[in-house]
Image 1 (tube, helix red, strand yellow):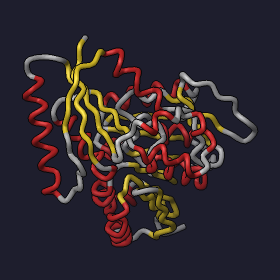
Image 2: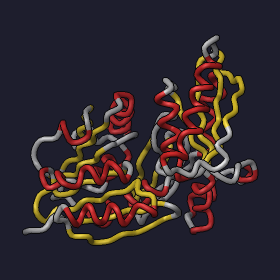
Image 3: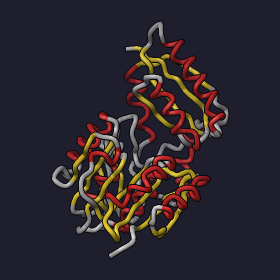
Length: 314
């Protein structure tokens, strides 16, 4: 089958907005190439030594979001809609950088497999190792290996926001805690919590494909009994409270969640929130404080931040 690859050259800050433009245009497969992921090479992450260094030379200095559309007479119209939507993003305060939209024909096998060369084993924290299913890795003592087959549209664990969340999970997960993963994507955070020994992990996502991929990855890691993946509108499908919640979404949704978060986290419980552009950290912190939460720690990596907060009490 022939496909049209549509590429948008943009900025790291605008990646999620551009990806949403693709989804709104009916594009099913989205891939993101961001040089900030490869900059982890400069931070001493040993597993990144496995990356093909020739890939770095081919990177555009910014982020590239690619979407794939079946080749048909309607393609030109869809691409025009994408171009117009990208052109509108600056009016919402987003810096889209170059914002250039291009297209080229590709074979299905080419785009469905080519992205995998960017995904190699990595160790984002002290013990968790993220390993794609098609790569070999020999674990050493103290490491917990998380096997992942993310599917093109979902997280591989290489993005700063995911790394920050994984590092916080390593600090706060124990066998007494139930963990909520809101917006679970490929299930990486819920599965990581289970592998770290939590009592139970519940992942929730609006996207039915994300739910399917998360369930598949839970099976792959033999944590079906302790990981429960649910399809629904974020916290609408939850019942009861947990000791720990992780939300790797975007700042705007995190702010909206703040007033109701104590309905889902017990007194003394922890909320790990990421997907937050550095410029919006103060907005999220104010919303958390207004909701009565206690700020424990804010850490940044690249353009992104994670905020860890606690529900008072206990």
